[in-house]
Amino acid sequence: MPSAETEPSRPPSHLPKTHASNVTAADVQGELIDDAPVFQSDASPLLEVKDVHRDFDGGHVLALRGVSFGIRQGEFVAIIGASGSGKSTLLSLLGALDEADQGEILFRGEPITKLADPAAFRARNIGFIFQSFHLLPTLTSLENVQVPMFEMGWSLRERQRRARELLEAVGMGHRLDHLPSKLSGGERQRVAIARSLANDPPILLADEPTGNLDTKNSGQIMELLETLHRDKGMTLILVTHDLSVARAADRIITMRDGQVASDEATHQSTPALH
Ligand SMILES: Nc1ncnc2c1ncn2[C@@H]1O[C@H](COP(=O)(O)OP(=O)(O)OP(=O)(O)O)[C@@H](O)[C@H]1O
Ligand SMILES: [Mg+2]
Image (cartoon, rainbow, N blue to C red; front, side, top):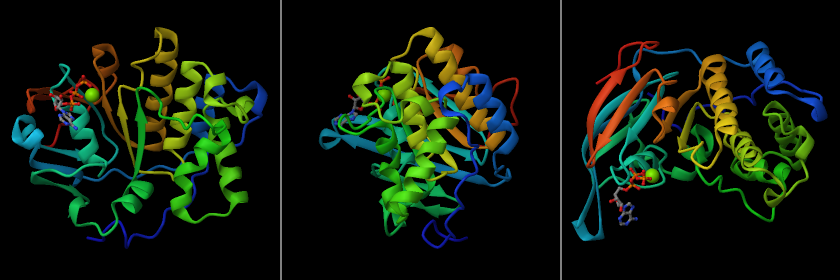
């Protein structure tokens, strides 16, 4: 099984060009459907979480206490659970932002802790979306989307071309030069989604991506994420408090006190891997 480092770099995606100033959500979705590359689904797990533990404060806080599950390529999994149940801790481990104290996480059969360079792994394989967007305040939309691309060694011209395409694809082609402070919450999240797609990652990790948005914007962001999952075959792992958001997933994992309390397929899904 090749490690993330030895995999050939994936070609830039072919998200469509759009007419920047008059993109609608329907346009975005229609175009993503037409043109997007499809990742083949695979029976073996893309990610495997094996008896993972994570403590904080010298063992006083047991954030994760023996978590195990597998995620197939192309699955859409929602992780729900009470505040403090370990959802964000788990997502950080899945994205190689943090390391387990016990147990391991395998990516295509390889322990992610054994990767020589976690930053390169993240840049090539993981897109992150957060509740509070985490855009850099002094950078424009076009510049924010380019940030993850530095890891790829692309030219400025290539980065700008690609960032513009991604922003157009999420309906933000008319706000390329705006700073985050000049954007609405929903617009910021769309820029953050474009940024998460910068390097065409196979996996999107989203931590409460609609948590700071009103119902209308939340609905639009969920439509965009579902389109990416459905039509590009992206593996989507989404943490949410909102059961109506979670129900869009193929499968819902419920966390309780650092453990998996339940792991259930929803009506639209294939059976879960355990
Ligand atoms: N860096 C840290 N240092 C100490 N304790 C931490 C740290 N990160 C998380 N915790 C603790 O670990 C537990 C799990 O936290 P986590 O952020 O994963 O919860 P969560 O399920 O994402 O909650 P929320 O829904 O409120 O975001 C909590 O008790 C939290 O206080
Ligand atoms: Mg959290």
